[in-house]
Length: 131
Image (tube, rainbow, N blue to C red; front, side):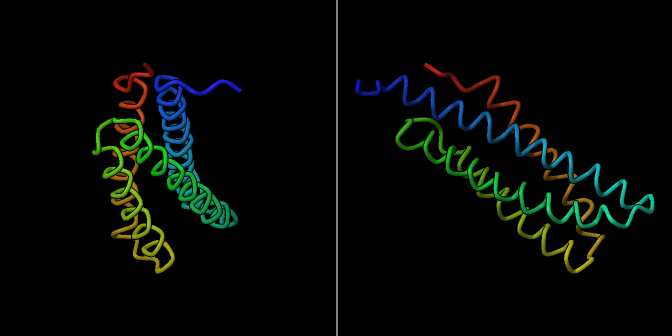
């Protein structure tokens, strides 16, 4: 078995970050759609909203791992790992606010999470080099 080169390792890390960030962003967008449909009166979608939150939050942990790997051993910037950690904190608060029905926090924080996730995902596709 051939040893992986540094660029191959970095490429794998970059693609892991891109995929996890994109899946996470899709999950966050799904959260907004499910919440909106729940508010139109389809009460069953609250269960889907809760389950999707668990999935989306789990993917975020994978994104954080990829961002840490990009930093070390990938020799990339530290800020994506810090941004991922910030999103983990924000989503943890988001889940608690949703479970406690603190809507005044839950809605705007969800919008902020979507914005941060969208910017982060766009950065992974535009700025991160695979070489």
